[in-house]
Length: 505
Image (tube, rainbow, N blue to C red; front, side):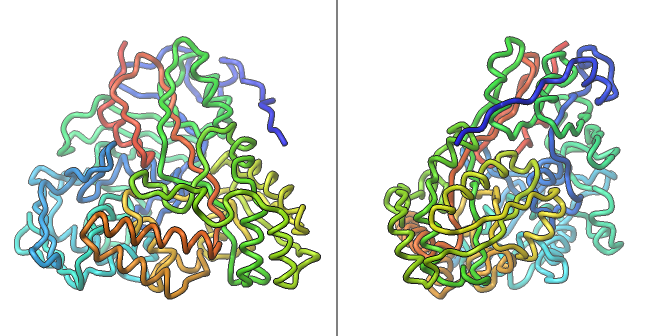
């Protein structure tokens, strides 16, 4: 099965009309940017779509960040330390940190932000990462003390995510979070025309220093071939690309540069173990054995990536060949189906989002073909991203093609799905005592070697239980004019370093 690149690149004049700009080179003060998927909302605590997170991380800030080496570095907080028993975490805030309305970020804002995240009514995406927080003290405006119910090694990593962004306490009280964007990050959101354009201006009060550009204008062009055409005619300076079919064409353009970096995010076929017949372990295992992950990668993503197990963090990942049924075995799959009472197969629907990832439809088609060999009749239902996200969050699917975010720590990455208190349990629809216990052990263990053993066992068990079928990890792709400098790609896929990008005349 192959996938051919048959799209026609648009002419410079056509793209210029779509962008609403003249066919001239970008001015130095403004970075003209494009991407194919727009944000689905502005609440940093609730958003799960990559397209939303990439925008919000330019506007909001967490207490800390992770750098390109996955090391914790300062953001709103300048320093932090754990108590000797690991049950108290104290932060000192940057006195220069200000929200984009000029007000200083204080410990009260930090406390209010985390209380909002922990409030079940909020529906915060990262709530499960912070359940060890028993109370929060604010001894002075620049000091925050988190009292923990137990030692929690991954909590710092969790706090580096935009889902843990600090928002103004006053905006929480006013109920305006999500209706407007007011953060302390490098850029202010001046205008948002959904599915069309965002206009950002530099936050002159940003504690991180002067930005490299005065503003960013982002055009939403659903066809990435059109984005490449706009870059060829120098209407676009910088672009986020998701489609490897387009990204691999960038190096052929003399004036353009492709930034390509392995990421922790993973492409996955999510089964719904609460729906028959996926309630049967042997049915889920049969699906795992019937799928040729390398063929999915080669066909949908031109081989741009590598087959993966559940853990994508290089220092902790298990060789996939050591995991359950990672070598395709159709006969074993048929035998498992027969033992489960489904020798004649069954019918199911798989959902996918149009454009995120752009490989979703191709992945679904390859999987549909492979599962047909064991009698599984798969109907493919592609949805607009916002419709897909709603269905996904409700767990309203038989199977789902997904691109899920990776994290620098396995507990932060997976506890929301695979622990009994996980706030995305409805998405996973599966938990057992072993997974929950392994997650809790890994959370509290401070010895890196022992944590590796714990999470290796977790990964092996998760692959064997097969609630999801992990497929592959790929790359983050950004393209830029060679007149652009300062962008640093990272394993998390963040675009935060746009804060220091410069545009040469």
